[in-house]
Length: 119
Image 1: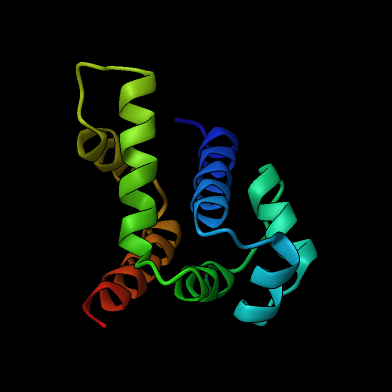
Image 2: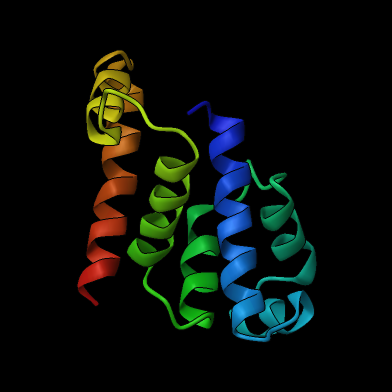
């Protein structure tokens, strides 16, 4: 899935979780100590420049683990489009094609995500 689509799906997933919990974007911005504008950008799919820390704080404010958000995203993606390759295989291929600097960046993000799931 290309990055823009992934970001849009991530935003939709966060918006769905927020709505299920009956929280407005304004309230989520206050609880997460970000802003309504950040929440709105993420949910609309325009959050490409959003720092991963904002996603962490939003997940915490929604009282869900980041891994749960990504799991929901994965479920939505797999039901929308079945493929012969698993997402892990696709990610592995994409990571293998990255430059060493980009691989290190992805590794840092995954480490943060995995550390967050242990909390």
